[in-house]
Image (cartoon, rainbow, N blue to C red):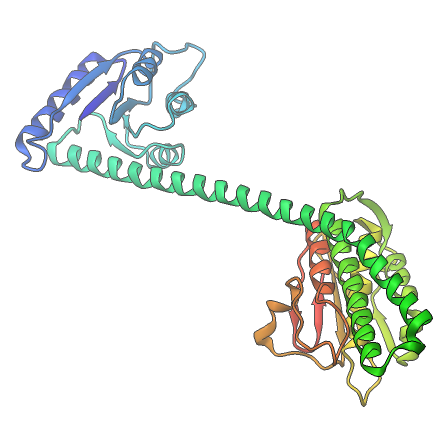
Amino acid sequence: MKILIIDDCKIDCDLLSLNLQSAFETNSLYQNIPLEISSQLDLLQGIKQVKDSDFDLVFLDLIFDNLDKNVNFLEEPLSALKIFKDSTPLVPVIVMTSYENPLVCLQAIQEGAQDDILKGEYHGTSLLKSLGYALEKFKLEQEVREKLAELELYSKKLEDCNHDLEEFAYVASHDLQEPLRKVTVFGDKIMNEFGHEMNQVSMDYLERMYRASKRMQVLLDDLLEYSRVSNRDYLFQKSKLGDILASALDNLEDRINSNKAEIKINSELLEDDILCEPFFLERAMQNIVSNSLKYRKEDQSPHIRINITKSEDSFVLEFIDNGIGFEMQFKDKIFQQFQRLHGRSEYSGTGMGLATVKKIIEKHNGAIDVETGFCQSY
């Protein structure tokens, strides 16, 4: 084991070195461990020595008279430790103090020291206990650092992968538009020009192909919108919250009227400014209200209540309706891409609506949640 003592007092260096050697020789757990102890009276030279050699542990004094006359170690007792850690952060350190000050010792641990000992009290048992504790603690800290580095690497890879998938989705959905359009156009031509010559079975096949191409068109449109929401740089600007909500409701005016829906807005914040990307935030609100209109109970007109409050610096929007609701076991599934809780025969859609809403809200550094009832918040 290689140990370096950095202390500007040679007597203290020699005393600690002798006590370490004695502790190793008399303790059965350490007797067979080769011990090499070096000492350095100058902090900067000690740092250089640590960089040049592989030391297992460093004992570091906190006060150096020969370091810098401008540094007042009584006022800044951790200066030496900070200098050492800034230069050699991956070496375990036990700091040595000449006076017992619990606050300084705690601050030293917070600054990266593994343990502390009081100068002059170099008892064999306590020295080895401190040494063992420092090495084990440093080992655990190193393992944590390595795991965090791995997590950061995996997170970066996942982020890159998601970005590549989003770009692929955009390219694929965009490039498939034209061939799909041709399928639809020629399907129309065949039905219009030759439909009267076909038998019932041929017409049925053609109509199925036509309906499938229409569903594919809707799916590609939704996928393209999701990709734009994900990849586009948002141009944030201050906008009236009430104006954005009004535009979203105006876009749904025909459906609101045809469903005889009743919408109530409870808020005194409609004239407040919100920093957002107005177009996409409007789309998110529109999608949520659209869901309330779609998933209505057959025997009831939709009743939608929109509550707007503020929590610290964030706006909280609640959309509450009297729709069919859902089972809470599907709560996480609702915001996933292409996930539907109902078949196409019951409700139209591609399962991209709320996934797009979630992405928009996240791009605004917001959060979205859903509860049975049906409640969504931004």
